[in-house]
Amino acid sequence: MTTMLRMPITNVFGQGDYSVTLHLGSEKSPVNLLLDTGSSTLVVKSTTYQAALDKKLTPSTAIQEVNYGVGGWNGPVIYTSINIHEHCHHSKHPQSIAKSPSMNLSDAPVALVHSAKQSKTFGAADGILGLAYHHLNKSFDFSNYFTEHNINPALSYPWPFSEEVSENLASFKKLMWKYPEHDVTPYFTLLEQQQLSANKFAFYSKRSAIHINADNTDNTPALELAKDPLNQGLLILGGGEEQTDLYQGEFQSIKVEHDVYYNVALKSVQVGKSKPITAEPLEPNKLKTYFTNAIIDTGAGGIVLTADIYQQVINYLIAYNGNFAKCLAPFKEMSAQLTGIDVGKLTLSEWPTLYFNFVGEAATATTSEKIVQLACTPQTYWQINTPNHNKACLRLLSQLPQWPNQSIIGLPLLNNYYVVFDRSAEKTGVVKFAQQR
Image (tube, rainbow, N blue to C red; front, side):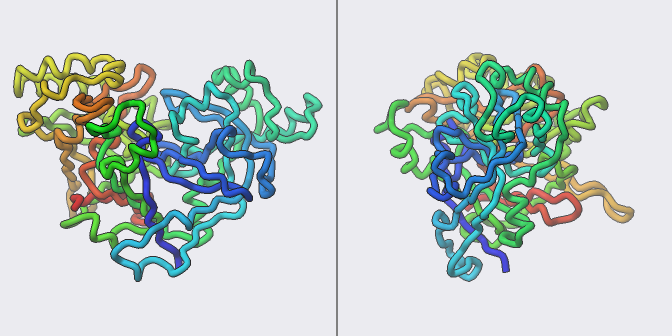
């Protein structure tokens, strides 16, 4: 019988992205890890997790590197214990939670980051907990490199590379690909394989940016900001549909097309009742790497639309109400996320809901392709009282220059729903959405 754990999460360490607290090693060092369905690696800063004190640490010859598009890192893979059961709390459904809940792992892979520069990728969090599949969790065996260069011990921990070598991610990546590659089993996959958790988890959130109330400033300590209910959420490991206090109505299911990211097929985007904006398929030369034209990503603080869709959405919003142009203009630049606009310029009741149309159940001989429509309200694609009180930020973004024509469906849409990532359904899973209570 597997365990279901309901764990508190907060968005204050990840500048809007949500993190959960795990405890690592013999010292049970607490680490706040960003929840990311857009990656698969469990990685922590070496400055937070005191590896030298960990009596359960087992080094390896493996090295990992991950680049998220807005930062990246490299470091050794070590194995140690991961403890979480202290952090669950009982829901209104105690029958679904074991009396002594435990999902503790005794020998789990963890990547360590030593570079202070690379650690900035995590913001004020201590690392990332990747919740996607094993294909994104590659490592490289440097045994031959350590022998060739007389490195003793012939292990990746302690980290044998200088900052000058390791901080050049592009050249280090070329070095890695000279050595044998293998996938590391991700954290959540280990829980399922060891029958500690059912093969599903759920995500409940309210915002995509930290809420700053009238009594707080941008210098207010994170732990104080975390007391605000709007900066809190829940991660349910091993469960979902039984948490009826968190949602109402029926679930809508989007098919996961590939078990790499949580790849989904986006058909179109609508601004209010306007004509749907077609989401073009992924470019053929990108299919082997990115698979579909959209992913569901809990680690994205905005909805990142392809450049074409983004511009059409902005055009429709301005056509909807010409006064919107002044509010939208500053957010052509990413720097506007650090300043926002005066909340007095914004009347959310005047803004339309955005609708995202996805492929739901696959077509069969007897049924046609089902389209699932999800709503993103102005209360979530705009964030009020961020980055300071009485400021507001638009959380719709255009694609990064190096990114393919793939939309990243992040927190502003997820904030409207109770979301269940059911990896056990069909061949590659489904993502289920129900209205929050």
